[in-house]
Image (cartoon, rainbow, N blue to C red; front, side):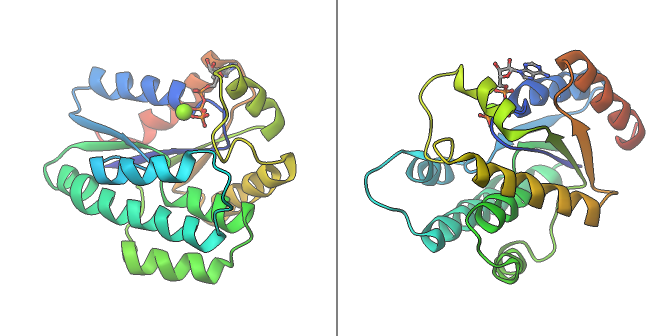
Length: 204
Ligand SMILES: Nc1ncnc2c1ncn2[C@@H]1O[C@H](COP(=O)(O)OP(=O)(O)OP(=O)(O)O)[C@@H](O)[C@H]1O
Ligand SMILES: [Mg+2]
């Protein structure tokens, strides 16, 4: 089983990843926990390139292609082998984030996103995705408490509103896979909602 967490910065992906990890371990699952961009040494180097604030303008296409380059490596070297060996894979972000950030945020056409997804994933998608949804500005306030902002976190509010909208559109189009969780609730309430979905969806 392949489970992913999505949402704008500060919605609580990392906090809830830890919760899901514990939930799965308590049920005796063997799991691999990972993240995007990144997840392998090579892909983590691409992550550094993508997230570092810099003077030079990074072109939308360069950003998009590097995201998918990192993903191709991550899927080939880590995710697929782990699934084949019977592990549950839990990832902080995956391809939905490219649709949301490079598609919604940057404005790259969904046809291009589809083409790259088809090329690199050939229809491979998570079995279950938690979309932690809340007003991006409130979420960013949470994230800001952590310190320096990365290249994405420096974007304007309108950018994150577009990101959120694409995430929600994708959830609407694929409601069996993408579970929308109200991330504005207390962490305890969010975790209750997540546990409820896990009870129904994770095979015994
Ligand atoms: N439901 C919640 N209510 C209030 N605070 C929360 C909640 N969930 C997480 N937080 C806090 O918000 C901050 C951001 O949470 P977290 O790092 O889990 O978000 P994230 O989605 O992983 O962020 P990023 O996208 O930047 O990695 C943390 O300080 C965390 O403790
Ligand atoms: Mg995080």
